[in-house]
Amino acid sequence: MNPLPAIVAQLQAQAEFKAVAGALDFAGLTEVAPVKTPAAWVLLLKSTPAGNSRATGPALQRETDTLGVLIAVKHINDRMAAGGIDALADARSAVRSALHGYAPSSAHTPLELAGGDLVKLAPGCIWWMERFTTTHQEQASNG
Image (cartoon, rainbow, N blue to C red; front, side, top):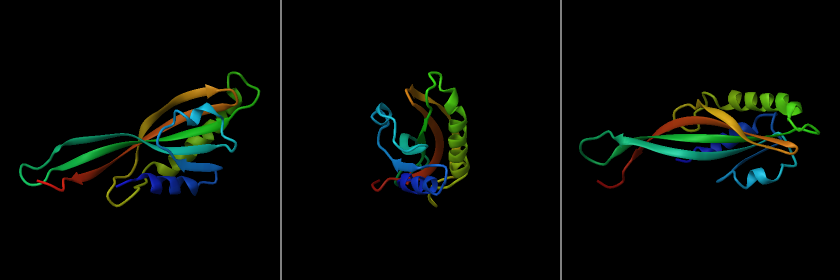
């Protein structure tokens, strides 16, 4: 049950972004400013299962996925990035409008806000991670 492709498609429908893709890790992404901005990458950051809800039979567990949307916006000739604040606010608003309350599949709950923070302030680029959570059920195939 991979929710990432549906979330990428949901963000690609937003006119705000010039580039949207899925990614496994963001460490390498932030090394070079993207050519087209605003841009966004969708990542699965964490998956946390709850305990087994059954006393007998195959295990059934509720799993919470924390998803991240890494946003990149440009700022020009501004060491403190003040010129990029409006662009970042617009990009964050577009991500929240597209994803908050969106269910990536019939098996997943609608996405809920889970915070956000500055990842990196680099020459010419602001990197921000917006986080969301969703849950789904996982049933063991053995047991």
